[in-house]
Image (cartoon, rainbow, N blue to C red; front, side, top):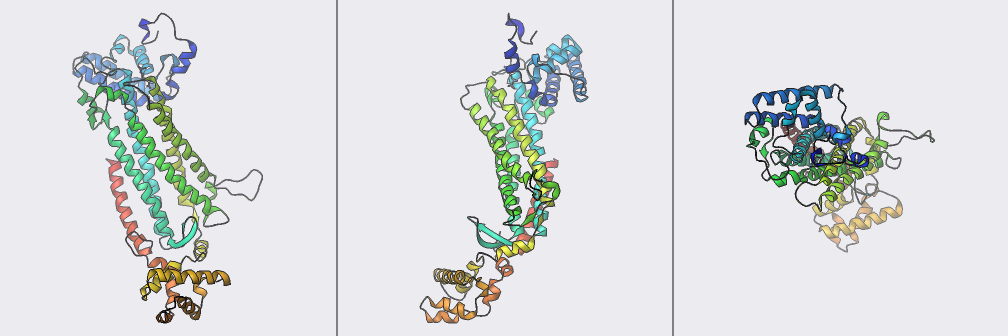
Length: 473
Ligand code: ARG
């Protein structure tokens, strides 16, 4: 008979049995279900809601059951619906009548909320650990490539040269915010819902605070109806995870471009690329493409949760059982992607020569020629105009700016009809146009100059020390 079978005259239809059972996926919560039940039983004993010896028997039974599950000796049953009723039924089968006392003052509604929160707390830490490893790889790669010159793009058109170290630290900032977002989400997950009962609280004198302490929660929930109805924390987590996927996806998109023959900025390690079944020459960036593709899947998990929750009246509704697959899928996907992406990045070779050559294209030093003129007394708008004309001249004769002779530069200035300007071009313009100097001069705080990148790396390392300490606590 079902644990709730008392008021029913008929058995559940087999189709319904299959349809509403969640054990196939929520068995993943067994550890948290047992931990939660142990804390609940201990509190019931302490409060003399059940006898102390009964609580001890229940706790010993649950501990034994946990071991059996971990040894693979337990088979869950679909008939017992979900992980909560499976554990209770297995416990009672194991220790007899006293097992039936475990569910005193508790509902599956607050139980599932507790289990999920315990699970999410652990998974947030695991995910943060993976983000941390990526951040470490970004810092060490940026350190190696702090002075490597590459083209910086806007509109995917060559804009100004940047250092590869600086480009990589862009991602450091993104993933740093992702780490912090997870930390922030954790605070809202760290709330103990047990004691809410089905929705209204319970008639037994529970000590909710002691359960929270035993299970390591920072606080107990404030409102029993909210405790069993709230899935905000899952939506918040999936939103944070979506953001991480978006960042990974942008990075993957760049890696895919960089690995193409047209860019040829990077060579992926053989272990992190794949071939073609027909074209013998192919080496494809499948890992990066798959991460880009899986981003849509995590957005889907978020969208499924938002849509599932949007019309639900208070308090618990069975719709909410649908939260688990989206939650598990989102977490699994992000963790797998991070786990694979980090070593792919760490083993990638950056082709410094090609990157430098690409930065020499597209007049990436044109702004610096304008800045040169401004520093010699021209207004920026006039300088912009002069350099625009010089670029147009270069395009006609197939030259780069640094290939022009001094006379050509002077002619360029004279389009302004201001004789004073014929004096301002000098030999030092060639130094000003060298890419190494172009990046080296961008010394603003947070700029691309190698010296600034080294400062950013120092700050990054400090941030990582703090993150590491936080994760260890
Ligand atoms: N398996 C259910 C879920 O995940 C547990 C709570 C069920 N409660 C209920 N009254 N049907 O949501």
